[in-house]
Length: 496
Ligand SMILES: *Cc1c(COP(=O)(O)O)cnc(C)c1O
Image (cartoon, rainbow, N blue to C red; front, side):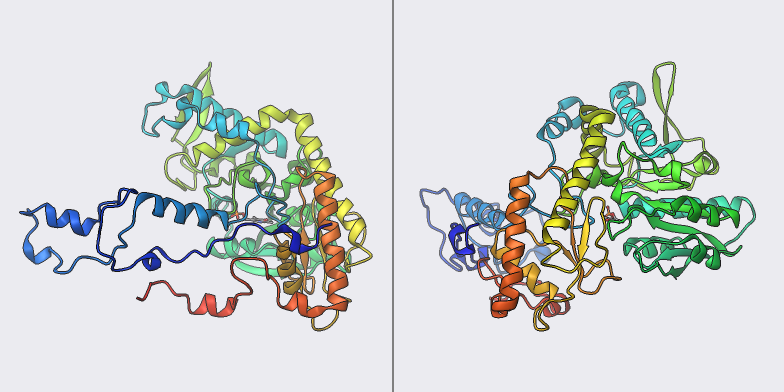
């Protein structure tokens, strides 16, 4: 393992464009300066714009050449870190490799250049792709019908909760509450609250699992349903899921399955067979679409038969080989996004699923589980594991046993000096100082071994030289930031 010092790269000092050479008089250079709007406005006299609307002094726009601008942004992009640069074990986010074949397929002119307002008979291929993707997702999850419209996981959750609401209302059964385990992802209570429900937190047991007896205690006729993710955010399979679902169904409630962790189950087990009534798929996590930079993603939602009438409109139908939109769905929760969703993401997911096939998807999940357990076993003597038994696709360490002056944040920051993206920290909330590692199936043993070595060295440094951790990162363009101040007092405007 290289000590961090050996990985030096070129790091430019990159001022703001405004600071490059402010107020410098425009002069012709070999770099063919970009004409500034101020100058072209002057040359475009006489103006047809009323003089009252014209500015008196030219705007302060940096006077730069094209190569200067290009280099500025290219250099800034090299300060970024993505899954194409290195290991990115961000728990709960499934930062896996996005095969380039899927990008090539999504860029085919027949997919990339169609317009959503083209009539159905001009875009039969695209409709067929969406129809087949919906069927594949239904098969993978054990659901009866799928809408591809929601634009993200949390959006799929909201649609699911609105469907649960519509289902109860159609039965004249207004219910007020939704049960959510204490291990849940933050979007679960947020989606329930947005759908108008009161959130009731249900404690998980010391084993990190949700128990049917506990759920039964909380269940009554005022509860619309339960929202949970399986495997849960501790990376543990909810082994009582069938009994938990039964306890909810017995009192007339429905079970929402947060499908963000499907990377542990694909091709192996189906949420629909475990009593889940509605689930979302995070195509940008499980089904290989670049993500992390804010989208676009897609969060299709799948339902069992009894929720099908409430799916968002339109649904894509197939009759005798002809595909069409079905808008005539009187019980639908309505339209939830522009057009039919983020089509490019659907193409990537469709290509990924077709290329891997059922066997390939199962193998991906198995490898994801194997990789997480490899890290778990190799690191368990160095970091405390609140749930030491086998995990699924991710495992969670705690800060127990670290020297008192060292925090989980320090560990995460120090990993950057070793060239790794830090894992998710301080989530799930039930684990003190949590460090949540999700390696995914696309990492080699060599990469995992490098990460393990870095973690082992950091655990040694934590004991022998805690200063190193507290002052990390040292090898990044900017060091430790004051995160509270950055959030509370962001500088949004350049001041000369
Ligand atoms: C990522 C995630 C979500 C939310 O999905 P987005 O696509 O980010 O909106 C919900 N639940 C879990 C467990 C997640 O990991």
